[in-house]
Image (cartoon, helix red, strand yellow):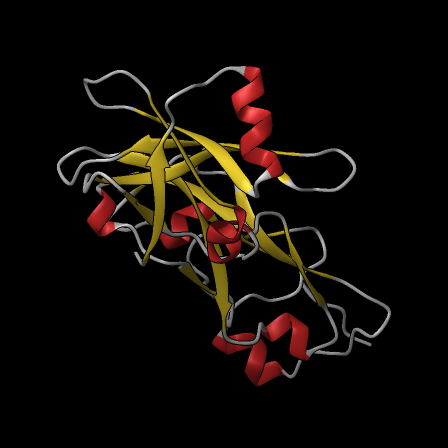
Length: 211
């Protein structure tokens, strides 16, 4: 998984006045949790979060402090101003190479579903999956092959299982499915015969419509 470096400085004071002064100066108060030490309070420029927060991708973070200390972490929580959407506060959680973590990883579909070719519509139930694994083993995104899905079939999380991580959803959790639509057309007999078995999918009452 890709990593983003955020440079900051330790906070000498964590009171309300000091926090307000930081925000007025374009700084964001942050806290790093985890590990054996006490929570670490630091501040960084708001623009540091441009490629971490305002993106669909997920990243780990390297926090570099002015003192020379470095910490590997993941974004745990973020607070926005209710009106301006300015970042008010960010919590990080320290990670270690030998300790598993839980993260939500984006799902990227691969291929064009058979059912879509015949007029169906691919509907997403989940855009991200919660998985658990070692930081170095977690992917930037999870690929879900939908090319064999016919109309009425669903793709379950069991289709994207991997030795690199453990999916933190029940086996019957649906990633996406092909639904019928007004544009549905008849399936060719040859095409229908070629798609008898689709791993980790299930067919609803309407598998295909033939005129």
